[in-house]
Length: 206
Length: 199
Image 1 (cartoon, rainbow over the protein chains, first blue to last red):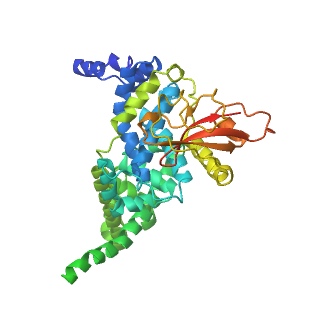
Image 2 (cartoon, rainbow over the protein chains, first blue to last red):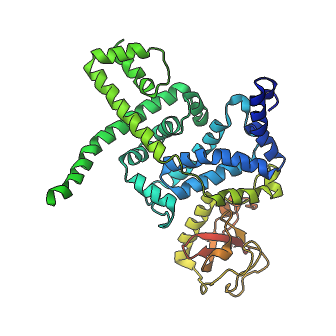
Image 3 (cartoon, chains in turn blue, brown):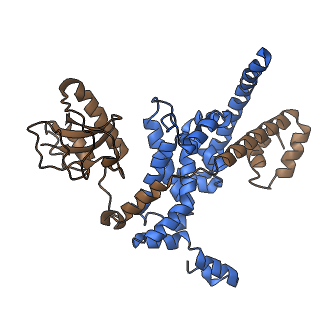
């Protein structure tokens, strides 16, 4: 990006030349440059996929959301406005809308993630982790609290970035995060004694 | 600092989001037993969340997603920024729901097709009911899926409301149109893969 390369040490200028900015890559994508798209995709697919996975507990849903997010970027690569914030917030915002739509539609159906293939390493990871109280607690939070917890505490977004992704005020993000963490803490504390008791049974019968 | 003020800062305190008021809040927790317990609870939640984030930090989308997106980029209507006409999963589910409701009454199920012969978007599979219009091509409903990879397929005749046409991007008429007949290719898992409208 031209404005960045005007200042800084020679090493930094070289690094910026070697590592194109998101805006540079987006321009390439608009011109149909597959390599630019791949660089951009590889830079951001992980966060997008993990957001959807952590929100849903479902690898298939996370894959769909990831594909849909980048398809949306391909169709509307000029939809991102750098003056409003980082690309991370923009992509998380699209992912949030798509994940929310899927989660609301599939509410009441079979638990997400159970459809995952038996031989899939990602599905194995999900099965193991979903036995974990933390993920189980996250997945039972109301969506608007879950979004705040996942974005701020798991994805590492700042309050401002999360507010942009969620389309709400920073104060709303703080409030939702506060309540989401409170509910999660209560669930962890109430579930922990049960888990401990359950674990103690086999020892007693030996 | 009051307990109420402490409560308003405790999450920022454990997340180390800001330094302002940090020392004062910690000093309050040392003096106040309930706020000290509150702080410990928040620390436990933060610790649990960070551990979970670390355990799932390596999760990434499978390579096939990138491959499918690169293929899509080569399509002129996608690279040019125009909306792609392939239906979303929502439309697919809408069609499935409509098809399932109608199947109970009017289903015509021909024998299963072992393998889809050629291209999903252009080739008419064998085993279609006699008398169907073979001039219209099937349109794939699932993005990036090759029907030739599926083990078995069935063609099911259904009737759909005019709104389904609109959902798929076809002209839906003036709103008073009657239901339309369509043929849906259904996989062995019961999921619709392609559709064509007969009328």
